[in-house]
Image (cartoon, rainbow, N blue to C red):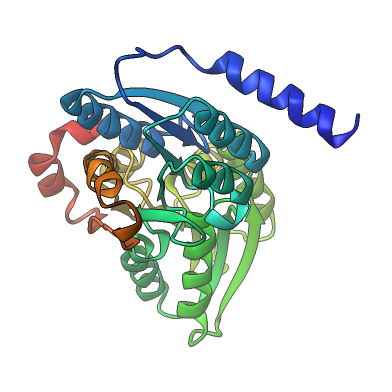
Amino acid sequence: MNSRIKTLLMTAAILAAMPAHAEDKPLIGLVSIAATEANNVRYINGAKKAAEELGYDVSVVDAAGSADQANAAIQNFAQRSAFAIVDLVFPASSIGAGLDAAKQANIPVVTWGGGLGLSVAATNGSGAPIAEPVIKKMIDDMGGKGELLALTYRTGEVCRNRETLMDKMLESHADIKVTKNEVRIPGYFEDGAQYANAWLASHPPGAGKLAIWGCWDDPAIGAIGSLRSQARDDVMVYGVNGNAQAIENIKNGHMIATAWEDSYTEGYNMVKLLADIKKAGADWKPHAVEVPAVLITRDTVEDFLKQHPDTVQ
């Protein structure tokens, strides 16, 4: 099948998956890397709440980890004369075709975790700043030595930046030996469990400080399943994003720490910003609108839940 036919078929599939929207309402197109993943869901819900308040209609496309599908979705939103488009996690460098189509149609594109670049108007949810407190705690807990399994994902800008930060922070800790495995979307729970099983086979109890880190919570949660099935309580587990399962695992003693990303507020704030971006037009200066992360540990989880009880509902 040639590339032109493949693109046409993909475009048709994206259009078929897109729900109709009210013609009298401005359309906000959300293109998600994994629309059922907990943090994506929170962001989408925040975006929908802001859209409801502003009288916008929202259409969500799940690109299922595919940059090709993301580009096709953005191009179709451009053809539909969307008011604005929100890219969830795909790096700007991987959605160039979509960004070009939106630019030609004078439609602003903002990113969540996709970074600034090309014609992106604004970004938030940047990966590295959110992960930093968790990585620091992990290194401290390991005492600067031991064996680490890192569950990565390089298609997404967020995980790519978190992995780069981890590498940089580990440069001064040569006694921490790192094994890296890249998970898939979809399939991250299963991959986390599978890679943990293989890694545990060569890292028996008593082999020194052992830790597993997920560039977001879900692969680490998959690994916890393997640890529990093997009755291994000697491995420290760390995640990032602070989804409900991660918080419950910290509360129950199966995970050491995560960083809660208030993605609901990130989605809400970004959609609220769109009218300003449109109004400013060519005078708009691209910038980041970050929401700080909160480190959650076994020592702080109870207080966190008192302040944010909705995070595990």
